[in-house]
View 1 (cartoon, rainbow, N blue to C red):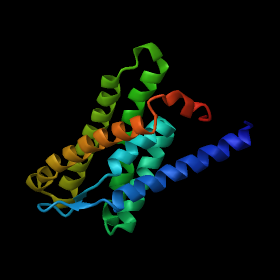
View 2: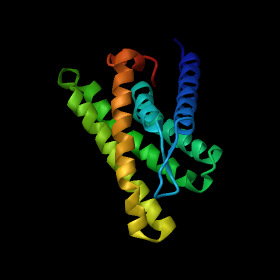
View 3: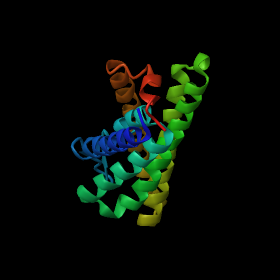
View 4: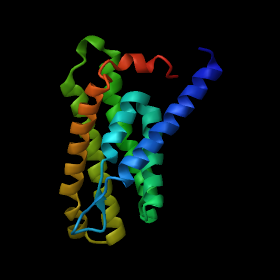
Length: 179
């Protein structure tokens, strides 16, 4: 595969993951009664994107897909926050994945899960800060924390289930084309 084909493949895969994150976020929304937000399956798609794209491109796809979902889903005010928070979430999870792939013999499911939990905690903390800034009230911001934790935990379970079904646990074959 030459450089042009590799760049094209990378662009197409990243764009596809952005769309998958967008769809997972918009189509599977459950409104949260005590806040103005919602929970969704976008986090599962973010983790899947990190499995396929790695930490850098996975973070780009996570940020853009989530921000686009906010814009298209009627929550445009959240788009800048989601862009940064979801990108950081994906990058953190991708760092653990990178460590697992770098040290093949030390690859364990707990390390991968730990990376996703760290990413989820970054997301939860990021939205806590965002809600505090936007609402000006820590009590209101704290109402979203359990929902965000539940969302990323469900995301971990779904992404691991899908990865095993799609045989993404042998991740290295997906990284052959990655730059």
